[in-house]
Image (cartoon, rainbow, N blue to C red; front, side, top):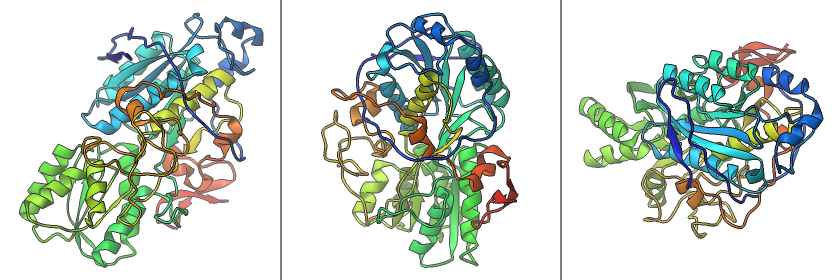
Length: 459
């Protein structure tokens, strides 16, 4: 069993999970790495190649690897998630833990699971403790795009690889692995015209409403990069529907109970609302509407409950964050740690798909098998309301339902590690770099994107 370590402030973690077996992978494209050298990369450059032999029986070490910081024969990798009571965070962490236990990684790394409290200062202390405890890599959900930066920079300076998944951080040494600036696939399986989940969700909502009208906006955790980008791009999409009015906004905190409570309160004040723009925990929005006897268009993220309701004809669009980003973040971290940082982009866009009644597809494989074809909802009774089938992703093909629920690897599958060339195929478009880094690459300047979001334009 994998052991979870609950860290408080400066508590030094000691719970180590030993690893096991399995995952598929891929190969692809081209491009260059992003701006901002990782201070840990500089540490790597100073180490003699032959000294890496101290990493035990790891057969997949590349020429850019350096010895484990702890001096042992395995690398120490911390896989973290937020302790906010939603299953997305648990699934993201579990997929990462499962990947870290697969062969050939199991000969090379020890993985430690950590639940972060949803407080920036606590997260800073936890990062510092992990560095002090000999971390070689930290995979983190950043509570703020900037508040944790100093701690991340200190980690990089100590030679630690830092991956931030789903949410992003502006510190240049961090590797951002996120979907928030990606261009999603549409219901026809083709890339849509515009990037940003928020933009596409608002466009879907107002299309379902038949045009402009009165809406609610339910935020996630206010202040995270995820919520900032979703909200800003949603406002941009509203400009295509003049006359749309936001009646009220509230913080749903990506929690179904909170969403249900806040939506019920808002319905008491504005019973004639025509649509609701929601985030993760959208099942609570739908249940509040059910209790009020209303059925109106809702956009949300990826809960199984919501997608099953859409399969029955509920007017909605499910556009959300894949928890498989935990698995993808783990594979990116291990690519850097075990083979060195050369050629690996610092900004990676994770693919995802817009789901409506038009393309809801049940997943029929066994719980311990990965997806053999695209699917996006589990049959009723297989998982809880808040679980999601978006554990399956083209970048994490070895993930199974059991892995997402337990953190144990999918049996019978061996991982193919990411290469720099493959990851370059998912490098963030340079025009969207300002959104996650608050700076633009060389040859680009700050400016407005067509979606009326601040980004980068070619000089």
